[in-house]
Image (tube, rainbow, N blue to C red; front, side, top):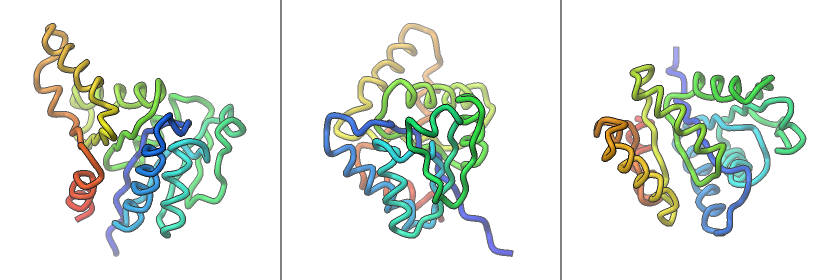
Length: 185
């Protein structure tokens, strides 16, 4: 029986962001996942960075799984042409299904929703509830303030220094490519 493909859950913005480089990198990430035979698990929308990752993965022949709550089907233009589509009742259920169907997490630029998703899986990792890799693509230094905030939390005694080891901040697409190559092997 062939080994099942590994899956990467991508948390990212439902908006394109102010820097066109974010969309270009989202396209490169979607293509990269497909080329490495990694299934994209994401929020099922066809808007913003989220939509660009999926369009690129699909265009490159990649496998995709989208998870979207009913109340966002219209706003996020939920795609129905994915390898798998799960429609949930709540945002919490969406995150739970995405996480359960992935072997690793990748965070691209995004807003409050992406931060919520990242902190939930980081907290679960800190509590020992999983050991899945968490990668953050620090596009143009976008997530630098997040890393500084985590250092701040540690410095003030609200987390152990080991918290830094539960995620990997990747400076660029080349570093992500190297990690995904290792991960896919």
